[in-house]
Length: 208
Image (cartoon, rainbow, N blue to C red; front, side, top):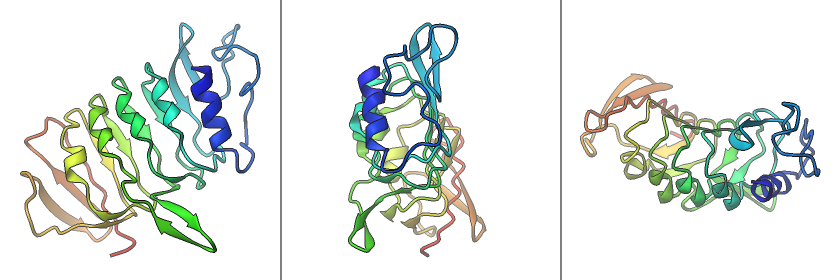
C-alpha cells in the first residue's frame, strides 16, 4: 500500500498538492488515532478509498495504483492537472466501485507549446473492473471513437459520465443493442438493456 501511494504522490507532484499531510512520511498510512494520511480512507489498516478531489494533483497516474487491491473508491477529479492515459492496472481493482477522474487533461500529453492525444488513453483492461458502479471521466481530453466495447462488460455500472470530451460518436447507428436518445446538444443519455445497469451518458461534445 505504501509503495503504491508514494508512487502516486511523486507522479503527481509537478505542482505541490494543496494538502499532503502524512504522505511520504513514516507515519502509518491509516494512522494510529483515526488520523490517516490526508484523503486516505481506511478500514482496519486497509486502504479502501482515495478522496483527493481538487487537491492540485499534476502529472500522470501510475500503474502502481493497481497494487491497492482492496480499494473501493477513487476520486482524483477536479485537479485540472492530470494528463496522459488511465493506467491499465486499474483493471486489476476487482472491488473498485467508484472511479472519478473528471475535470483534468486525461487523454492528452504536453507536446512543446501544445498538446497531443494519447492512443489508448482509456485502456481495454478497464473492462475487467467489473465492480464499477460509478465511472466519471467528463471534462478531459479523450478523443477518437467512443469505446463501447470497454464499457459493455461493466454490467454493474449505474452512472457513466463521459461528457465534454472529443469522442467521435454516431448516434444514428445501433451498436451492440445500445439505443441513444439525444435529449439536448449537451446532455445525451443511453440505456443498454443487455447490461444490467443503467448507463447515464452525458456525451457533451466540445469537439463536435
